Image 1 (cartoon, rainbow, N blue to C red):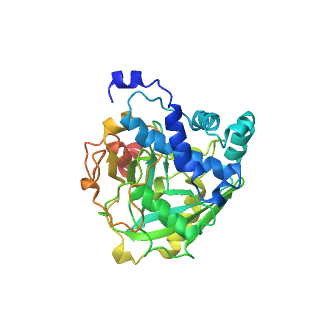
Image 2: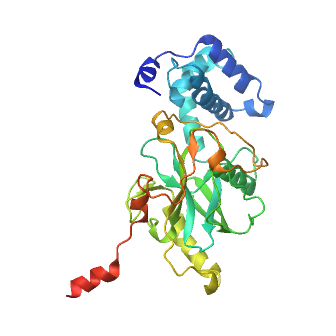
Image 3: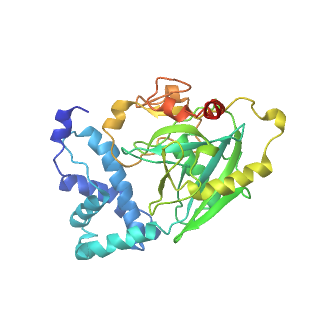
Length: 328
């Protein structure tokens, strides 16, 4: 998007547009989804994603809005929600509190060497790396949520590989997080997110280069290589223990160092015009697409030394030569 186009984005959505979004995502939702403000605000959040991902692309004058700003506009415009506008602050606060209690599930995907795991990087500038995972829908089973979230964020269907008893689980604060372990995935597997403007990069990361403890109040922690990770550290210790118990035979272990590799990266021009949100492109039952033939906002970056930051991710000290020089 040009600087001109960004400068033009100052128009708030019209009453007609807000009425359409309210009707499409809130008023026509199933009755059970309208029984509490928490569920209603999840519907408003979906409307917000649609507005950011689709409506704004069709109208270059529309302003990007935070979820809080969008929620206020929806309550002001939607006849069914308008009576509660005076309580919007409390309603929104309760919603954000509720969200951090919703269980999260996903997967730790290991390659054939069991030395690397697949991580995804968020869309916004400065985003962290994390395991593919997300919040459960109402009454959704843990493993089904994991399948859905991994598909949405990586385009990889783990349905046949997932074993419901093979998982790691931690509880942080009031939130339970369960990650199923999917081991032995081929390095050449092609990945591409099935949502818009949610994932900017997918890469194999070495397990021994992940942060093992949190020394900060934030959930975003940096590993030995300086890269930023979100809620990865609680799983690293248990994951290493799991790998030591399930390590494949020595014949399958690579003798050479298995480095981290970027396997999918959004085009730079798409990142520059990013905004938060998601728009599902295909359900988990859809056939997997090659990332090189996906939509024009993505490209396959596999083993390329020209990718910004790849050489940094692959960097490792030559400890033997350093020690030798120190001894001299």
